[in-house]
Amino acid sequence: MKKGFTILEILVYGALLALLIALMANAIGALSHIVSDAKNERALRSSAEAALERITREIRFAAAVDTGASVLTANPGTLALTSIDPFTEAAQTITITLSGSRVTIKKGAGTAEFLTSDKTTVTNLVFRHIPNGTLSQSVRTELTVGGKNFYTTTVLRRSY
Image (cartoon, rainbow, N blue to C red; front, side, top):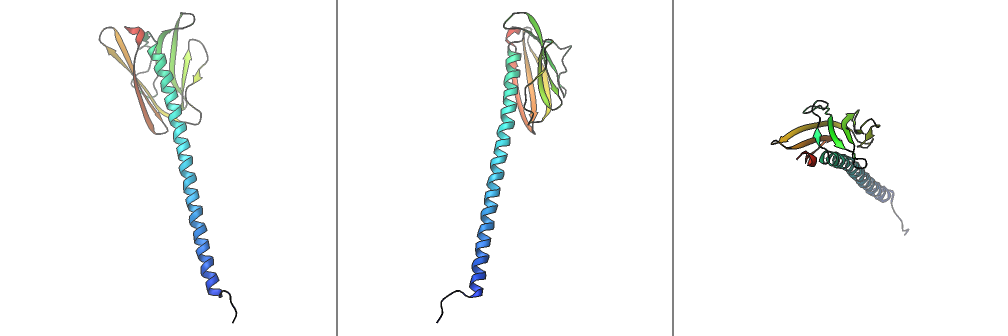
């Protein structure tokens, strides 16, 4: 009697092996997609948080909001701040606005600097001026990056 496999057994084993390989490839593809999404989410959050941190720092050290030069409570917003250069202690104007799909900051007559990554898209930038009594002022910043909303409210320290 000869030992071996019948053609039917080989076909069944081949089909099971093909099914197992297809399931493993699908799992690897899904894992790759999850890792890619996580990287994109981290880049988006990092860009938004870095921009808000810089905006917060500039607002915090400003003396006043120039309401005439600012576009407040509208998208795309522009925030013009009267501030002091920390190195020369000379008065300067800082302008934060949306240029295309990126947030920019401009100090005085200098060139605009991007605050958000070119890999992220900013779809909403709104500034709200909040007078706090007679002396103090605050600014609420609303930023939408990649469909995610980010908010911060900052008190102008030099305004009181």
